[in-house]
Image (cartoon, rainbow, N blue to C red; front, side, top):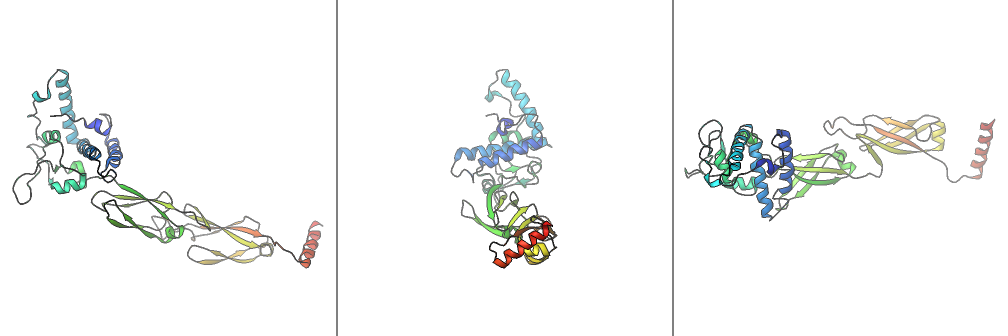
Length: 323
């Protein structure tokens, strides 16, 4: 029987903590997931090995037993012993807590295993060391090998699967109001994903267990907008103001994403002046009832074509101002 080096499988040291083990598992499982490697038998086998290694190293009891076994195996190998002569009997099926298979409180069918892992049961090494006969096949009374899972090692049978990632581009208007996207998986399955209000570029929308094959994570990319520049939950917009309103004061209209409001322009307003319109920006992602601000930036528009009379009046103003 072949010895399985689970630490080498996940590429972690023997002193790695649970956080490092989980991080390594998620990275490798995502890389070798059958959905990302359709028809690749080597990737499928690698994926099974990764899950088996994680099943052991993420569980304190199984990891402790595996480490004890590994130390003894190393001594035996250094002494020149042959694998076929090793005393496997003292290890076989002795799950934590007593009798073979004890502590394995949940059994899944081969079909469920294939759906979760893309292949059949754990290796004979795993079965020998931890007991792979977790329960009877429904309706037969016969025990089904290789499909027993320790609840502790898999978070109460919520078996961690690598997330499938996709990117969705949305307009600023869609990010403001919320929207949906229809995703089609490689197997033809279609899923409607709700994209909430307030998302921004870099936001991640997760559908948990959407297909029984792990979560789906949507990476959101908000497209540039012709009118607004986004600054977190604030929006910046240029507001054209004619020269006369800027000099004498008045009102102008400002268009927020969901309504148009009147903005009072005080006399003598300078070009580039910023008016903060509170609560008229983007909704907060986690609290959409709260919104950022709308920053209205004054752009004073000079008259491009002056009549003779207008030119004359501007000349008079210049002379008056110069005194």
